Image (tube, rainbow, N blue to C red):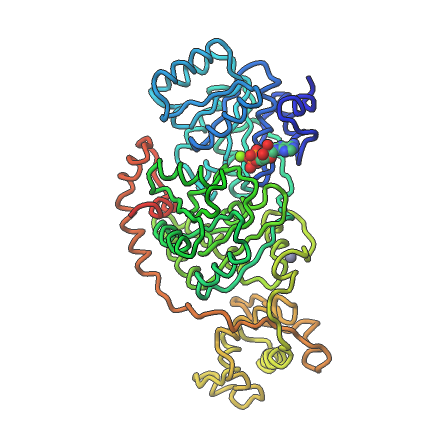
Length: 557
Ligand code: ADP
Ligand code: MG
Ligand code: ZN
């Protein structure tokens, strides 16, 4: 049977998607593969189809019990013998599966990493007696601290290649970030792997970012136009998922909360109800969603700022798996950025802090962007993309713009009069007529001094940023950043070129919120590292990272 015939026979699809075909060919040739494909792209098929064609057992490493069950159920429905082993099963059930394995009755076995290496490697020894022909590592980014969903137990997989040196390994993830990719390859010790990257663009999703003002009212307005549709609302903290779900219920919406601190029973019930369309809205922390295959999610809302683009992109990617038009809305407040910056600063691991902060900056830049959001996202994932997508808030020109020519002229002439020698902060103080010693002594006689006193400091910062992103100003590094004119500046100064700026009236000022209590929280969490590790049944040599601690904090009281 050819792969295409098997696709039709077992899965009922007529053609391969993305890079599925090439990936499958490689696995069939016993080569190691790393496959990067967006959420909903069809990663499972890349190992399930070889599992049908190869004569033997495929081991699938998967992080979540709920995920294993879904996959195994649907494989069995397609007539492919598969099973999973996890702690939710009775000894009887597990024994039954072991017997099926010994008799070569199963094509796929799903198992969590800690299970694989549990009980003095007895499981490993048993699996080595079987005819293992493929090992698939799903959600492979879980092995990387740099990814957005680090699971320490995945680190154990680094020994896998040694245990099965001749078995091809296929690692799959929707995280395309370069650093994470490299980390996955190194940690898994893949042998000369072929790397497949599919386009990450999700053309049917419209991306919007709106200043967060009164989030609940903003949310009600958004939901008002989507009454019968299914959606996911992400919040930063466990507590706010519960209050928000309750508030939405009061407004007549079928909403339930989901976070890792709820009992397994409640989690399973809420997830099930959402998957079956019995409830429309799930209000969740990022604990919700991995591997959830619900095709008709019409929108994903982020009430709070995500920590990085990878997480944001994966979460928004849960909308519109059926290919129909869907929405991603993010409510942005600078206060959230300050709060997360506090989280990211971990003094016992400066290297990691620096990376987390960089990723947070990229996320904040995305929110403050005055250009096509999709292009930014695609470039972030190193994928070429034109500067106009036609379906993000910028391309749909949903920003309120106004004629900002006069403002632009003031800014550019201030830069010129200060001889292109100063940074944004100084230029703003000059424009606002600051009495600071240096400005007063040296520049108060210049013509634009004080010409922008009617505009707040924060607005000036935004205008300078916009003028830079529109190419009327540029930043140069003279040891410190200095603003300079560009080839486009002259026409504005001479009044030959109009400049449109974006109105920021709606943006609230949160800039002075102190994140002190979050730093305190992190300190407390660090002291409980060991306790947490025990709670999660992790081996003693695993040290939980600060990032993981903070994730866990979202589901602790
Ligand atoms: P992910 O990449 O997120 O793991 P899945 O493997 O869960 O995605 O697949 C998402 C959906 O796409 C599933 O419903 C799957 O059956 C479907 N799918 C996968 N491959 C194809 C294909 N070649 N043609 C049509 N549908 C496919
Ligand atoms: Mg998947
Ligand atoms: Zn766009």
